[in-house]
Amino acid sequence: MTGAKMTFPRKWTTAALWLAASRAVILVIGLVGAALFVNQRTLEIAGPAALNPETVWQKWDAVWYERVAREGYVAAPDDPVGQAKAGFFPLYPWLVGLGLKVMPSASFFWVGSILSNLLTFIALAWLVSSLAPSGEHARRALLVTVTAAGSFYLSIPYTEGLFLLLVVATMVFTRQRRYWLAAVACGLSGVTRIHGLALIAVPAIACLTDTNMPRAVRVRHVILMGAIFAVPLGVHMAHLADVQGEAGAFVTRQALWDNAFPYPFKAIAGFVVFPRRVSGWVHGAFWFTYVALLVRYWRKLPLGEALFCAGALVISTQQETFHGIYRYVMVLVPMTLALADDERADLRAVIIGLNLVFGTIMILAFVTNNRLVV
Image (cartoon, rainbow, N blue to C red; front, side, top):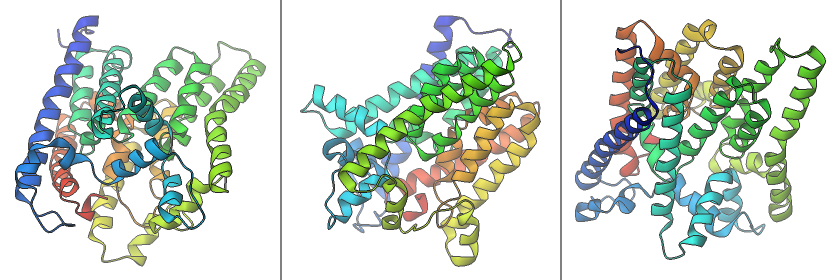
């Protein structure tokens, strides 16, 4: 029966098969792109070097995560590269750094990629086993996730796999009413990606509206959850103050990335400031698409989960122009589950088709260092 819940072995096997199949397709597209298209930095094609995944995929932010993993955040006042590292959050590179200490002869790329794939697999298996109410819903959720335009980031040295796991963990713990564990997951997400700062809405709202507890108890729980949530970011900020001289360096150093004074909806103003940036219009269209989906599913989502999605979408606009939106929306699990549960199969097919086309273009742009990808 399509509506039956998956058995324990089957749900893990299904997640593994979907992940493996999608990764194989992504690897082929990346190989073709690197082997046949001109690299925008070198004005050459990779040729036979395209057979080496590290040559193809160790690009963009992955290079910076390696710097953080190997060097930390220490930076001298006259060291712009060292200062720019503060723009990247620490949890993922710290985990990869631990792996490098265990396997010092291994490359950052392979340790990071193995870690990302492992975290993604756990996230997907947990998603289908604990968040999808039926087997059919689980299969649809897997399809939406692995065909997302930003899905390829789940398997390379980027934060997406870790963030996806933390979002799933937060939702599972919240639905189990284990609010303090949910707060821990939220706190860890806050030092993984800036969008993680919105995740605390999931357990906080659920706890505040939990009628199984007296109101005073709920308030105390939320205050404690807020304190738990703040600890990881507070530790990171204290460290930045020590080694870079500024606790808020993760914000102020955005100036080194051409994004001084970030603020909400700045990217929308970018349509006027940078009207000829094709990437801004393309990524902006993707953002508006998911805003429309959130409006469609708003009433079907628990309030905290809807606020998390809204907060993450707003945080995505604090850049000088729209970019990377396909990455940021890919990990919004509440919207993934809502889309998977939508009775409108035609709408789901349109969204999946849009992601497949856009994802293929972004993979080709990524492996050839084309700025359209960011």
